[in-house]
Length: 176
Image (cartoon, rainbow, N blue to C red):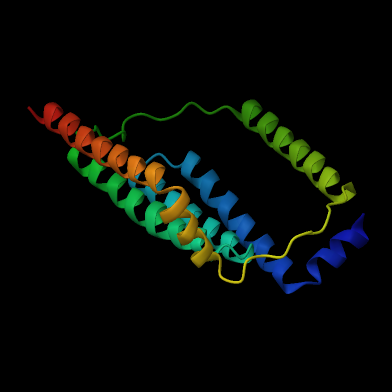
């Protein structure tokens, strides 16, 4: 089992994958553990950017670009505007109760889950790719998006526009 681990880290791409995976998981854990909303948004943006790095490693450049453009950019900025537009109280006076037994059990559970996943991945055999990848992924996605899936694409743009207008209306009602 450890020989598989040594052969896994002998490749540079696998090492970069491991680093991006750790950054993605770390950003997600920090997003859940932070108490200030701005810190949560920044760690969520960090998670999105790390996911884009994983997509680049998977040779899905278009998906990585969309991940950065839509999620790390637009959604994060939209969340920050939402924070600025809404009223929220400062939670300085509230302190969470300490639960050492709960934290210990949580740590043991996380380590057990990591061990089970690690063992399952190390003992599994994954089939290789059977079909070649497209020469230009973005061109093929563009052809499919604007030929075969043009109606769902346009419906999604209308749906997102309606959701954005609805969010503005809800924010204005809270202000009044």
